[in-house]
Image (cartoon, rainbow, N blue to C red):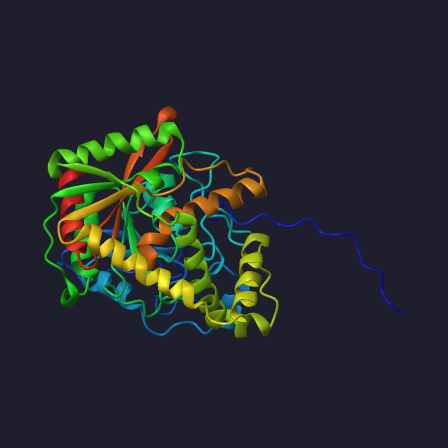
Length: 405
């Protein structure tokens, strides 16, 4: 006879060490880099969507971890850090398949935001950001497709850097939308941010840049509240003291929402191409937000290619090339305000995601480097200022940040 199912068993909470700070310890302990290098003594948390030889890559999802082989070689970015003397302390929690900006994870737990207790850490580089903000490590190595370095940097009060597309190799990174994927990093001070760039950036596509102007995107500033605007404008003033004058423009005459829609139209089919076959082989058990985004990616992949979105991408690239030249940076919010509370409603989370996508779309579509500078808004909650530089101007942007902070 068939057995009746027993009473439902209570779900076991994730391990405390994951919930608290996002740490996924290495079984064999820290991995030490070559002694005497430029990053000797620097400690690193590597986002769990990047390969570390001999360590399972979980990508924030237990089904992914169970259905993929343990990598035999390090991601190039990881290998470069080790060769420069850095010590890999741990892997760190990520949102599932890096397909979120909130920093929450139903499987591995949500890292605690030390800079804003009770609030989201921002994602998908949530674990690296939380560990750096807590002082557990010096550097968080992560990835940024739609804002996954920029948003956690803003929410956790950190410096963050997303490089020009193609200037840091992405092999060994679990893809999301490959034409937008970048390897980025988080730190507490400008010297570390700059030092890491000198190790990771490919030198061949460097653009000689000398910053003389700051351009404030007024339409992007209009996406955040008055307190955040006041905080960010004060930070713009500090930057402008070194690079006067400061100009104010409307960045997207056709609307930031149009740019964000183009980003989604291009990225969603790429997401499904990267993961649709794997998803079809078994239920990954995605959390509701991530599952809905993959469903949207599946639906978009079945539609004809969006030629208009590609035209908009080229328009945005031309627009930023013209604005920035080889001597200007664009200033805008790195996220849509301070980190929201963990218990925010689903509708509020989706609204904030939309704001963050509108703020992040320009740099993603144009492939420009972005540095995030932290500041404290009213009440002490962190917010971040994103400084977008010309493509290939990564070194100049990092040098400026090192001089400022």
